[in-house]
Image (tube, rainbow, N blue to C red):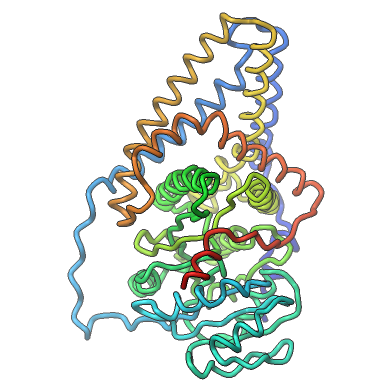
Length: 483
């Protein structure tokens, strides 16, 4: 049933006709890039750096939009009065799927964190994607689980009845999730990565969000990266922490436009019925969590259903993030390559009023975002060329523009941290000193690294060579050892 639904619902397998307007919007970014870059060869003034100016203006416009959209968060919303029990909706049943491949060192701390939630899940299903490490011995030692036959699900763990083990042949994360979904009968399905640790009240916040809003079909928790304790790891954590703050505030902003697309599969919730209706996760997409949200939005628009996608500010989690240059680049290669895949398959939605504000606002922005990293790297390369050729006059103006941009970013950054803290209640690791350092240094290092990973993502997209690769754990492995 789910496979047939996927074949029908997937624009990859059943391509839709792409309207002329969608094609034209898709041409804006590359044609503008060519026109702006050409200025370098016959303009001696600051206009020769036109690609950099447009890059800065575009990024600033997105910043202004986010600031406008999150403005109401500066004052915490008053808590709603609790409805009498007779009027309250019955909380939905909730199951957590942990898809894992060779995650033996962290399985214990991840599962225990789920089991010790203030509102624990009705079921924790470990979807073991062909592990060949010590996972079986670890599950036997910690939870008394005997190894089930391949393709079978274990009985409940003797010491933790909510835990079961689904042992699967190696097929990738999306296939593991799809197989697990078919073994569930819960109303809500949460996907939690084996390298992600939920805050004590995270599942309660998720269950509450789905209880309060029957139209809610997908929701993301708010993630904070953890990298480790060495100086290099702390630097990576600082940069990624403030990047995550901006990203989740941006998701809140687009949620207000009914245009939220980015759900973090590391900690995401779905209404199981809706997930099955659209065919589950796409095993051929590099970012299956992002792609499925497009199908949910598409199906809702086509069937006239009022399906909604949210970011739940009270559902907090920490996730093991890359702590080296190559690990970071590989992660961003997969993320951006998957973004390009999904944008290409759903290009018929771009500028299409049938899909509401998602089609007319969010997806045109995403079409421009496909080339934003190339704009940024090109602007940096042209700046270096201007320096090498001694063109000091335009360089001084360019530097003044860059300083103005840094000041704008810094102002937003410091202001948004306070907004984020009030919205989520999260304060750890968000000190103003590192925030100031990150804002000043980011354009000259971390931002270039992000763009380099995105260019690598273009290569992965064009070549089609990418799959689910286990990241090297840094922080969570240390937590597991100390548990």
